[in-house]
Image (cartoon, rainbow, N blue to C red; front, side):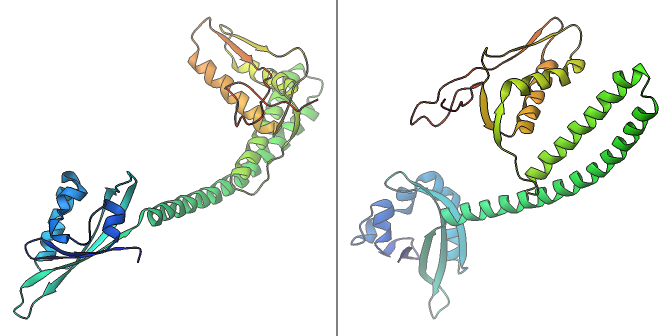
Length: 279
């Protein structure tokens, strides 16, 4: 039976333990009278559960959970139930003890709670993304109308076109949110990273103060990565804007990438590296 079963008397002396106590703690079932709960659990653990023992000896059934470490050094979470044995005169003769390992059960419960939270967050994200997309559609319609009406104005190129491009960036952000909400699949394909970096640099330059220098250091030859290009672009934008906020006046912000070969059996690459197809 995958449980620890024992009986101790009113003086807290063990009268019986099953084989589980040997498997967990190395105790000898043939000599239960030699066993001390304080000794095999540890003084600190026993101090935390001792009040439950006295409640059971007072005639009340109790269940409680606590951390233990087996003789092999394996940490477990145990749940123990103590059921008092009541004599005909109403006094407690002793207690039956039943203990289970609930480590995996608690881990499964925690995973389920986390999954439920992520599902709820995904539903919320999907709803917000849908509403935001409707707002952006109205903004884009007005911007496009303004561009048509003032096509001969130099201000259109300077102000309206960047606003339209910003709207498209917002739409791409929505796609990322929908991907998180599992309503939009990631579009992973072979991507020339130099082109992504160039586009990021073009988009972000206006957001960098004039008193700071922004530059990109790319490899001489084209390099490729298997990725979602929009997600890569968004990540690079976030990195640069974070660097902007962390850089003081006169500072330099450099976007640098390099090609590294992933050797056979290597699971990951160092910071700033990326995988390149053979050939």
